[in-house]
Length: 353
Image 1 (spheres, rainbow, N blue to C red):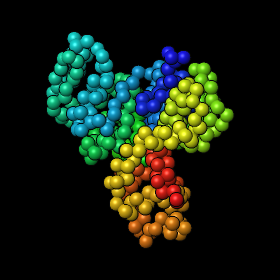
Image 2 (image 1 turned 90 degrees about the vertical axis):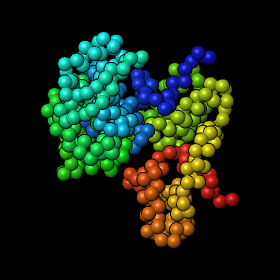
Image 3 (image 1 turned 120 degrees about the vertical axis):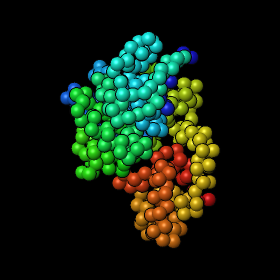
Image 4 (image 1 turned 45 degrees about the vertical axis):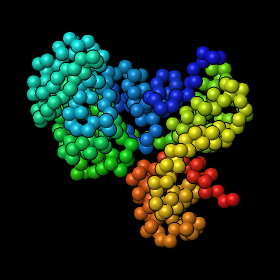
């Protein structure tokens, strides 16, 4: 048992058999990519967008270039990612040969140890050359809403090149209002430019077989009610289900019969310094609003406002907007915490004595 690896992966892209469910979404993506159709995947953070698209691309045997737009500070940084991820870990000589003569309008250098392309100056012709060059593979642009931060005109410039390429582009984004503005506003350059997939939670009934399979396959026994307890807490949230399963697997492997609730409490305690820091940075109205979101589904009900000791609805609205801007909460039908463990920490803190 000492050599058995924990099958529940957290904090990394998940692939292969450890990728949980999403069969229908995977099938849809493979079909659209076979049709050379651009795809837009929108969901909150930690819903598994990146794992899903890379899983679909690998299953379909497609070559791709992955670019994280949030890591780019400017256009040069974005193009550097495109080029470096396109050429991969090729020897320096092959790297130079691959780009010589292809990118005549771009000023760049090639560094050694390790080999890396550095873009120095970006002109309009050089920008277009790079996008065309890398689009011989499927290009995945993660956190695509960040291109607006890089340059307000960047979406238009990208669209002008992308619309003429044969291979599809994939756009991933976690800030849903910004992604919808980019792809569903008739005045946007990317309006109606691909198939939109809004990624939600995984239905618990579909997650349950995945959990029981991996406990059984690794020879770790679940206690009665464990699987239900996991899904009652996570409601099928991909990241937090894997996260909770990871720690419960470690407990069960050590023959520890701690309940699911006890494991959740352990996880909350392990992260409590982060939650305490985040909470301490909030003003009084933000703290009151956060407590309301933790307890109530209808945050604007008279009962919720009275229990939360908010003196005006407009103060609650302002506090909720600021918490959403800090990405502590989000709204999808109703307000909710982005971090389920933070909500548990908040509930424990505000419980009546």
